[in-house]
Amino acid sequence: MKLDLLVDFHEFWSRLSEDIRSAEQSIFIQTFALEGDHVGQQLAAALISSAARDKRILADSFTRVVLSDRFRFSPANIVDASLRREARDTAAMLSCLQSANINLRFTNPYGPLPRKLLSRNHKKLIVIDEAVAYVGGINFSEHNAAWHDMMLRIEDPAAVSFLREEFLSTWNGINRSTHEKLVGLEMFTADGRSNRVAFQPVMDLIDSARRSVFVESPYITFPFYDRLRAATRRGIAVTVLTPAQNNWRLFANYARLECARSEIKLRLFTRGMSHLKAMLIDDECLIAGSTNFDYLSYRIHQELIAILTVPEVIAAFRERVMLPDLAQSAAVDCRASELRKRWLGIQMRVLDAAVSILT
Image 1: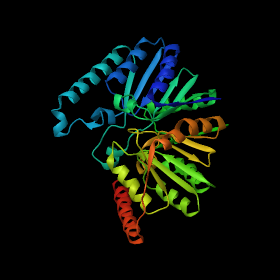
Image 2 (image 1 turned 90 degrees about the horizontal axis):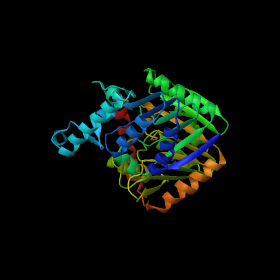
Image 3 (image 1 turned 45 degrees about the vertical axis):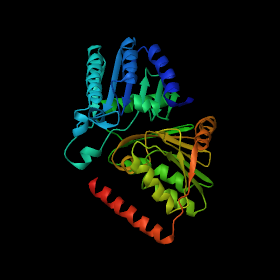
Image 4 (image 1 turned 90 degrees about the vertical axis):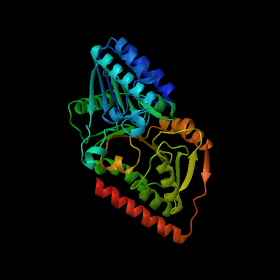
């Protein structure tokens, strides 16, 4: 098995574009966001020029209503000239792709009920021929490409076969909860209904941590904070790294509230937005993939989770992601009085209950 950790978009695109050029049979791309900006056009051009016979793109319906992190149909955005231009460019790009015999489908159409509104297919998955696959957190849009993030490139027949089958299942409108265990790599898919089963191994790993848990993610919420808080009470060193400049500001404040009522060490990434999602336990086990370690991932999003124990990959993550990101972050003093901790606990429980009722 060959596993490569690709940090940030430039490194990811350099490898992916090479794989697209050499593809002969098929290119399957699943993304959460697909926009007609420079990054989307770059992908479209690469696919159109590829000699592969079977080329398909799956994108979530989220990208039909949100462009550049902005809801297209809000009163202010409807009249925004730049956003309207990007919407036209995106429509033209999609039409061009379809004219070039590249098949395109959108997952999870919106509906009026809360679950239909919130349930998204959040996976980022690429399978080329039957030779190589990519999983991780990077989408195809300029703003996402500018963020700090990572992908995992996999060369292994069994892993690629599993991920190819997963793509084709979603293509056919079937969301599955599946599992594949290989030497050094274990993968889980969450179907949006029975996600708690898929996430149980992650919870078990947190619960069994012996020394340390490092989490980097922009959108961490309950129930993951509950397990991290419990780990600190067992004497485990827990560090959460989340961006200071979060594209959803609520989550930076949420992190402060959670860490104020626990011994979790909070650090804010100061080099722009980090969209990277990873958890390293005892420097021995790396959890990566599309999950944000938030409630929506845990309950209703379709997600892909990879658990890696390959020493070389763990070392690469420490040296190329964790240590540099910690060096480019600032510690936050989240100390609070016992009274304030109790009040924060009440606020979190009310929020938990409200979200649970909606979903």
